[in-house]
Image 1 (spheres, rainbow, N blue to C red):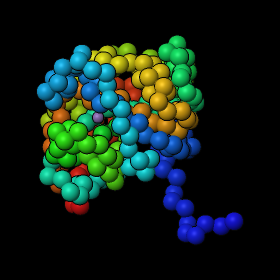
Image 2 (tube, rainbow, N blue to C red):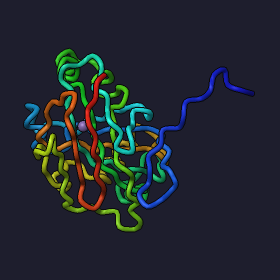
Image 3 (cartoon, rainbow, N blue to C red):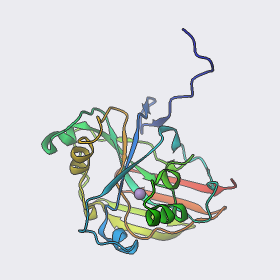
Image 4 (cartoon, rainbow, N blue to C red):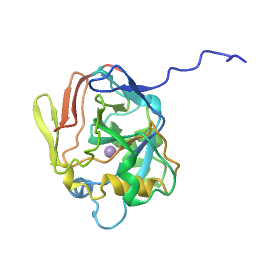
Length: 230
Ligand code: MN
């Protein structure tokens, strides 16, 4: 058997210190997972559990490549996030077993068409066009975590044109990595190759063509790229 046209390339992410690649299966994302960001968006952190949404696997942007300003928005926002890379998966994973699924960590940017997201929220519509667009998931190389999988209170930061905009700690996350894996696996069979974007702290704002974004999670990785024309 052959294909009617050549299959798309397998989306993949470099691994720090290795020539091997991490083949991306699915990208799941958590919304509203830092109390300060929930408040800045006008919500109450304790009112409801985090929401899950997803992005296509081929929305990753690697190797610090520049990112085209997205089509069909006038309010494209950055959101710096811890990204969890899974090496194994399953369904209905117990909280106690969840960390065994973690292969490594990266820092990623959940690019968001905020104008379309706000309209979707208002109208009770899906978030797909606000979150799952082309090049919406810039990501650093993945750092394998070995046996030490707890990141503790590692600092997570993002700067825009050299000015710090987001500066928080991973221990500000409302739901922990293990809780996210356990909860997500109630709804989806998680697989090796899945990436989990785990939510952003406060300080999100819009970008424009020509802006330069740098982000880092201490001990995990760093990413830097510029926004270029559509
Ligand atoms: Mn996000």
